[in-house]
Structure formats: structure tokens, C-alpha cells
Length: 104
Image 1 (cartoon, helix red, strand yellow):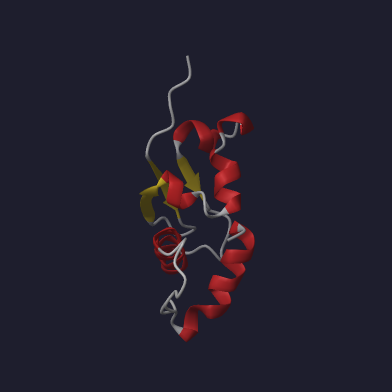
Image 2 (tube, one colour; image 1 turned 120 degrees about the vertical axis):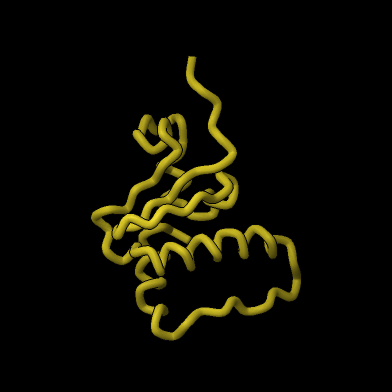
């Protein structure tokens, strides 16, 4: 019998940093949602661990900001007047590439 999905998943950056986030928050990113879908039969769906080791745009600093956004999005999902999220200018290009890859 298959195990029920856990409440938390681990996202691992290309440089080895690990971030534990709520599964529902991680589902904001379409790529992660598909990786964790039990019907996909991906190893990530079984382990609850998404490793981006060969995706250089998903380094630790960028993945940390992505995780922050996942929670930010969930927090402000139904809000009318959402404040801007603080994004350092030096991360903008990398975040854009990561967002494109992760389908956020």
C-alpha cells in the first residue's frame, strides 16, 4: 500500500542547500507540483524530495527566495491589495530564469 503524502517536502538547490516547505505551498510552482504528483511515478513523488542539482539557475540563494515567494503567494492568495515582495536587484535575472523553469 502506498504511503500518504507528507505535509512537508524538501527542495534541494543545485549547490546542495535544502529547504523544507509545506507541500501545499510548493504546489504553487507547476513544475514542483507535477514532480510530486503521485500519479506521475517520479522518484520525487515517492521521496517527497525535489533535487535541482543540474539546474544552475536554481542555486541556494535563488531557491531561498523562491520558497519565500511560495509562502508569500499562499499568504496573499485572496488579498485585494498585495504589497510588493522585496527582491534584490542582483537576483532579478536568476529569479526570472528559475520562475520560468519552475512554472511559477
